[in-house]
Length: 312
Image (cartoon, rainbow, N blue to C red; front, side, top):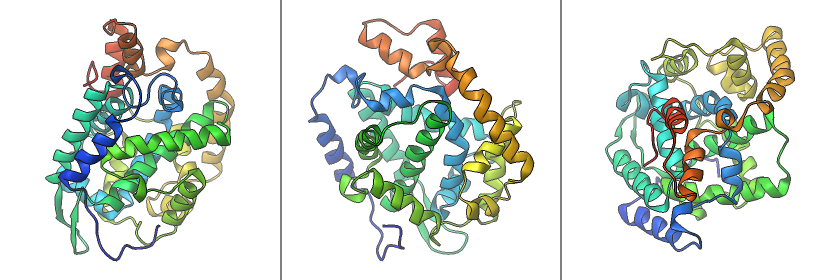
């Protein structure tokens, strides 16, 4: 699946509508969204630890020339990396924890946004954001990075749970405009796809992607700077070829920082109360299921994680 496609395929308006319609036919309460409290998706993505993988996911996305060009030409990532994270996670969390109506609106808005994101690559050629192979890569980086981050601080998921998580993630892919037939069939196939992509000439880092990657890792747009151990962990998780291409250091000092983080971070994280450990969108969804409005702490958490106080 990672070989260079002979022809480009794009998500049409009809594709977007048909995929949403297929999700709406799934059993379940509309207020539970497309996943719900019994899903492994909620179990994993409620964890604020998932953000440990955000830098890795962003860099891997930038290694795709279509994504890098789109972000360079249609976003303020170079000067506002935090704003970009917020906009990304507003969409993701609405899809994951919102009602079916909220998730559907988010999907439609994302599709309309993507229809206006097109242009020319620095190396030549045309790109469009609604191209399926590029969307699939963005989706894959989010899914795999979330699992890597989760398992760094919490007990690893079983193969059965990983399989369930991947199967459920295809619903998020559908909200992105990606049909199940455009994805690997199961978790093993998904891992094979990502491994092939890591070695594929489809991924490379040009000067533009390198500049955007530095913005991501510096926390541009905020006075806060990622701690050293976070940069080391991101470098550790990157495929060696792309780590080198992004000029990420990974020597003895970084290895030691990762070893130390592996020792102290799980203990620290497991001691956090749920109000801090779980992200605001999860608390908001739980409040909704109890017929309540999100409280002040939940709204503050939402603002911190996605730059807005409520879902939708």
